Image (cartoon, rainbow, N blue to C red; front, side, top):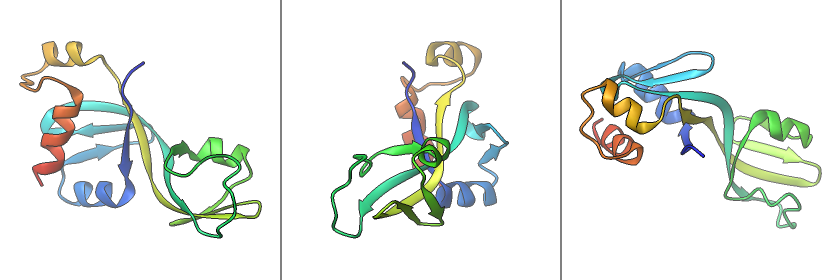
Length: 126
């Protein structure tokens, strides 16, 4: 299974404004790294705020908006409600590389040893 990464919307907004990424309907490109990720809208569920049990065990996880819609979730910016539960969430996208890392490395001048190194270098370059 390929690595997946969560891209918070706030970070994407900054990176887009700085012309560091290209985002289309289903793909995100880290321009400086020439790395492509297939993306879908998702949220990182940070905490349950009502104090009631989390029956779907969502806290701490990243889930696609489509999955959450199947659970009956109502999302509005940094909040989500499912039944009697309310959550703080971080909107964004979850992505998976479009090619294996070794293929990416062969096709580009990438000096990194892993996708994790690419992402760390990219995140710290701003």
